[in-house]
Every structure is written in structure tokens, then in C-alpha cells.
Length: 334
Image (cartoon, rainbow, N blue to C red):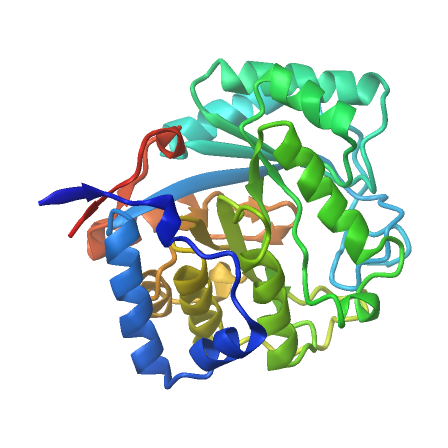
């Protein structure tokens, strides 16, 4: 029997204590609970396939301690100006041919400025949208006017991660505030654009910081439609270059907790997937992940390619989620 999910089932009033109780459950119990929630709200075995392209690389004025594109760090990343539209459309076509249904364009900017580069990005958005792909951008901070312009151009989603908890934030970034990030998310939401917002683990944060970030995301007036869970990929030359690799169990715990707190959101297994074998990725899917980035790079860091992911999908019996499915009424089997 098929029944419609009621929005009344979705909570935005989670307390820190409730989230702690979920997060600290024995990991196998946590996976089972998350899998049951996932089965109730999502089509199990269906995974959103996304591709991320850096349309403007390096030279960023921010001081994000994890980022190889910050101008102040010597990481060997070459600075490249904004790509031209045809280069971007060609990359989008390759992504579509490889099975992606969402194409995300990232620019190493602190904030969007009203100039010719922004006009070019708007043209890119229009072009990719006309290809039938969900278009996503991550361009730094945007104001209400800029968000509206992106929406008019056909932007489907905007990524702006919180990165970590509010308490830990100043240890990672000092060039903008936590409220700056929340304001951009609010501007995107007001424009009617789908929100993509998550964070990174492995920055040296505590479990309490991870719980705090999940608390902020899950108590927003409306949950982000997409919640990326990234494992730090340490890059030589950044302040976090010597951070140890995050274990798969830490990723599973974050993904499972996010799935329980935000049942209708896409939970994306994002950065760090290159270091995971298929078994480890399968655990993440079992815990409620239903979105990945595919393609050889995530901005400037390595990522599994299309062929490797196709082989994994075939092995695990996964199917790509269709474009624009979020606009339809979600159905569940119950």
C-alpha cells in the first residue's frame, strides 16, 4: 500500500539532548533506525548522482582552514579565471552522459558581486537548465537580489555549507561569521531556491560540535533539501594538512543521525569518498545516504570517476534518481 508522507511528521524542534541520544546510540542500532526512517520517507536504492565543476578556481580571499583554494595558503592550486560558457556546457553534457542529474558549479569567491562575471554565471545557469539538469551553484555569500536573479535564470539549488558548529566556527574561519552563512541560506530560501547545506567532519572538532551543527540544520524553519556530509580531505599547505583521516564509522554516525533528524532531505556522501572502498560506501547508503558526487574531481580534490561509480551501482543494485523529483509529492511504502 502506498501512502503520502505528511509534512506534519517532520520536526524542526529537535533539542540538543534528543540529538545526542540519537547520535550516541550503539552504531548498529543507529544504522537500523536510520535505515527504517529512510525506507519510510525515501525510495530505497535510489541515489541522486551529482557532478561538481570548479568554474573559477583559486585565489579566494577567505581563510577557511581546510581549503586549498585560499590565496593565503601555498597548496599548488593554480588560479584560473572564470571558465567560458561553452566549456561549462560541454562539462555539463559529459556529466549528463555519465548519468548525473544535478550539475553544480563552484566559484572560489567570498561573495557574489554584481559584475560581468555574475552575468556570465547567470548565462551558464540558463544553459545548463535548458539541458534538463538540476542546476546548483556554490558561489559564496549572496544577497536577496542576487538569489532572485539566480532563481530567474533557472537555478534549482544553492549550496552553502555551515562547515561546523557555531562554537567551533571561529577555529576554522575568521573572514566571515556563522550568521553570514545563515543569512545566505535565508536569502536563498526566500528566493524559492532549493537549499543544500551540510558540513565537514575531521576538522579537529568534537562530537559535540558535530551534534551542534546537526542541531542548527535540523532546527532551521525548513530543513535543507540536501545535506552534504563531507570528510576532510587534508591538503598540504593548509592549516589542517596533518589531520587524521575520518573513519567510516564516524561518517556512518553523521549520516544516520542526519537521516533520522531530516527524513525528507537528500543526505549526500560527499568529500572523502575517494578514500572509501565499496563496502564502506555501502554502509553509508544503508545508514541513509542517497546522494553522491561523481566525476574525477570535487573542485580540486580527487573523487571516484563515472565508471567506478557505475560498477558500484551495479553491484549494490542502486539506481540514479531522476531530475526534478523533489518537485513531486514524495511517496513511501508503508
